[in-house]
Image 1 (cartoon, one colour):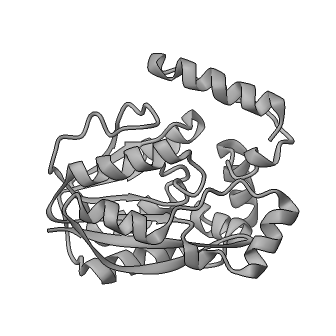
Image 2 (cartoon, rainbow, N blue to C red; image 1 turned 135 degrees about the horizontal axis):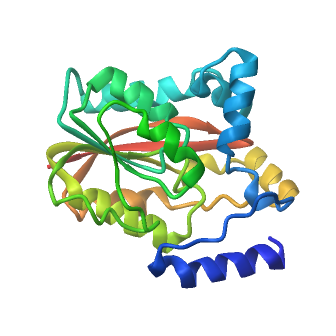
Image 3 (cartoon, rainbow, N blue to C red; image 1 turned 120 degrees about the horizontal axis):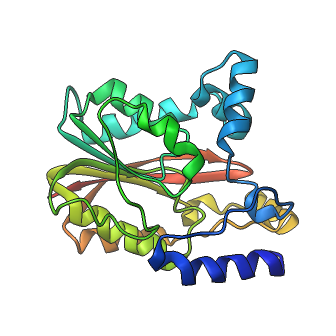
Length: 245
C-alpha cells in the first residue's frame, strides 16, 4: 500500500464522524482495484449488452456467481415467498439486491452504502430505503426488525474492527427466526495456490478465522445453518449463513 493511500485512510478515519471522506478519482494503487466505479462499469455493461450483475460476474468473478450466492442463502435459510424487511451492507452495483428482491419481494430494502456514485442505481430498486451510512454501524435500523441482513464482498476488504462491528450490528437488527449472511476469507480459503498468488500480487484481502466468526455469532444468539464458497479472484471467500434462535 502506498504512503498516499495510508495517509488517505488515516484522514478518512478522522473525518468519518463528520460523514466526510476522501475519494480518489484515479489510483494505480493495488488496494483500489477492487472498488468498481459506477459510471465506467454501467457504460461497459451497456456496451456488452449485459446487465450490471452479469457484467460484473463475467469480469470480476465467475458467470452466475451472484445468483449462486443468493440461491445458497435462500436454500440454507429455507426462505421462500415474501418478507418484510431486508438490510444489505455495501450493495454497490445492486447485483445481489436485484436477485434477493426478485426472490423475496421485501416491503422495505434497507441500504447502507458508502460509495456515492452507486446511490442513483440503488435508489431505483423497489422499496429501497437509503440509510445514512457511517461505514461502521446500522445506526438507523431498529433492534430485531430485519428478516434478512446480508453483505457480499465487503468484509473481505474491511479492517477487523469494521468487520466485527458490522457482524455485531447484523446480529442486533435481525429478528427471531431471521437470517444473517456474509462472506469472509476463512481458513479453508487459504490453500497453497491462493497463498502463492497473494504473495505474488501483494493481496489486500483480510482473512477471518472461521471458527472464531461462528462462535462470535453464536454468542449473540445465531446458529450456523451452512456455508457456500464464492469466487474471489485469485481465490475464494466463504459465505456463512446464520439463523437467529
